[in-house]
Length: 236
Image (tube, rainbow, N blue to C red; front, side, top):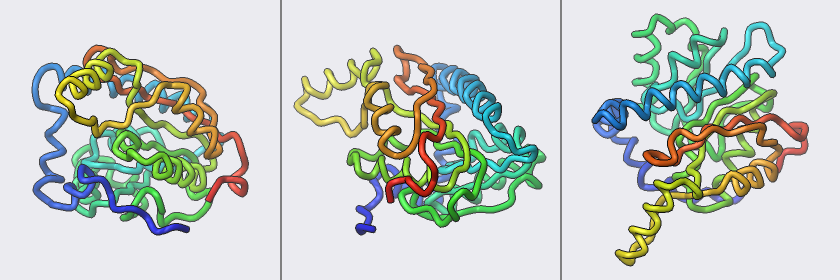
């Protein structure tokens, strides 16, 4: 395996405990962000239920990587028998663990995994399904995104729920236009649904469906992936 490039600045900041704690409050600030967070939760729930319908295990294990500050941890843990939290930040893992305990779901947490999502410290086929929210758009290099998608495929026996920023959405097109007028480059990674599907296909996944959070206010799309190739054939 080639040496991994440094994590994006956005990710590295969460190695600071204060920045990690601040992230927990990010989606509660302002009416539009709170409304967007509720809409996102509904879409993630829809995608998760669709994913679980494709999992034959009676007591499934779900990997949440990155778990972040545990925004979705109670939702995920509440629908499966076993929950695994993964993140590059030990502070995020601690906050997510606290969120589960506050929700009365601490007993569902069976393991925490600290490390880079491009090289997960997990065995092949370790879980029945995986969720990876709001991560891929922070990695501008395609090779990094493919590494993450490949790792998700390697460790999961079943489907994945993930997200990407839709290049065709009104908000993101407006964002790009504004940056161009100012002579600045956007740090956001924007993909059309077809481009995202192609990256997923290159790493052993098939895009089943995706749902727009809000083309006007967000541009995030929640996606459901299912395995298209055996784990042994996943690019390394």
